[in-house]
Amino acid sequence: MANSGSGDSVVDRVVRLIEAFPEGSAALQLSELADRAGLPLTTAHRLVRQLAGHGLLELGSGGSVRLGLRLWELVNRNSPTLALRQAAMPLMEDIQQVLNQNVNLAVLDGWDALFVERLSRRGSVANRAKVAGRMPVHLSSAGLALMAHQPASVQAAYLRQFKDPADRLRAGDLRSLLAEAADEGYAQLAGVVDPDTWGIAVPVRDARKRTVAALGVVVPLREMRLQALVPALQTAARGIGRRLGDSRTAAEFRSMEDL
Amino acid sequence: MANSGSGDSVVDRVVRLIEAFPEGSAALQLSELADRAGLPLTTAHRLVRQLAGHGLLELGSGGSVRLGLRLWELVNRNSPTLALRQAAMPLMEDIQQVLNQNVNLAVLDGWDALFVERLSRRGSVANRAKVAGRMPVHLSSAGLALMAHQPASVQAAYLRQFKDPADRLRAGDLRSLLAEAADEGYAQLAGVVDPDTWGIAVPVRDARKRTVAALGVVVPLREMRLQALVPALQTAARGIGRRLGDSRTAAEFRSMEDL
DNA sequence: CGGCTCTTTCCGTTGAATGGAATTTGAAGC
DNA sequence: GCTTCAAATTCCATTCAACGGAAAGAGCCG
Image 1 (tube, rainbow over the protein chains, first blue to last red):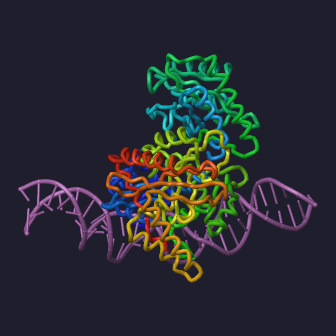
Image 2 (tube, rainbow over the protein chains, first blue to last red):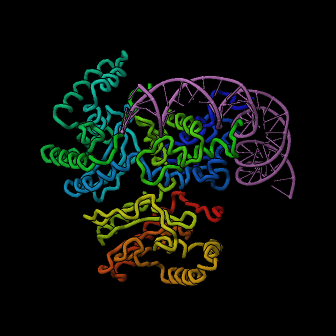
Image 3 (tube, chains in turn cyan, yellow, brown, red):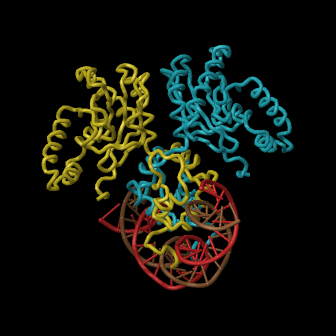
């Protein structure tokens, strides 16, 4: 064989290599990495060495590989969420101080809510819904808040997913959940991660009224007081939207290419 | 011509492309990106499209390119600094609450301090020393604290840089600064960014006593009270080191390959 | 509308990427 | 200390994916 026995380009392989790291893993053995990326050991070895040469990966002793500090730096000094996070941070801190609850900020990516920032309840150690974590739209209040305010075409495409026989029921439920969230201006959902918590989220709109993010809190069931939470969140969300106004964030969602 | 007219591999080019984004830029024109990366327009175009296909880059309307959400996700859910930041976060919050000052956490990368986390003074808006920002070792208290506790070989290599005629003076100054920092157990430096602020940083050591990070604060000159700050920082730094104990962070610094 | 700039497609050329085989390294077991 | 086994690493002949100049398309502005 020669250039790529299978039908994928070098770029494809590099991407697969980076994607092959399982969530939260510190380091991987080269052979395991090759395996996970579906690459011949030799090829993986060559690519890893090249990437490590640029600092995007780092080689530990004994063939262990992990993401490089340089890559972290490049992405984080320039992340697509930077403007959003900068706009949101002060207001998220306000929420955290006033309500003393876990606060989070998510954007829509495909059919998931992707959490881009979070602040923990003071004193809490629990670390659910980590930064850079995902939750399916229908399993998170943030996801529902985001989807409820998407253009009709996106919602339709989303709901089409659930047209499968077994899920028939779900589609109806979801549709009304979304409608309700759209009407009320917030989404709520009994905690899926933890049965004793409740999630509430509101949409964050930019100057052009497009929903670019969701601002949410996770509260213990017994401390749940919608009357207090929702207005606070909505006020903060508007504040974020305003600060977002000038900077050209856009946060274009990748919509249905994924299928 | 054929495969790579110049002498660089596909991987090299992809890396150059990602590195070509200037700090904090939202989006770049394709042609400008090609220019900055030193790639023929056609080649840049092809690579960008491939990367965008995987979500590592995103294409805006009109040929604008920026880093993709997917890349941000992959790197941040799995960053090499994750363990360090998780260990440090609660104690950084303590410092922030107790002292009410800007707190930051840095690691050594080459001859720079790379800031991996920061908390702002309550109510402050100033956003200096951003996350993923760099400061040369000799211009930051964090850098000095880190370098002061590196093995002798690393320090020697570092100081060798300043052996150039013009910098002759500096080498001596630096050497004594480092020695002092090592003796005292903390480093201080009059604000370089802002003339009215002062930086103080202490080393964070892991279970094997290796200095893996620096914990620092930036305080207004008039609020400078070493007696109060240093012990608080040192206590927190020890706490971080302890929490780091089991998780295998290592944070191997890339030392002198850079020259 | 014509001139300009930037993006995108086309396509023949060719050397960089490839991966099986062989070798080395290193850790665990006897 | 010696053997075994699994891993990383080096070697190298083969060949197709990457390359990039040229040309075509897309916007934009005066």
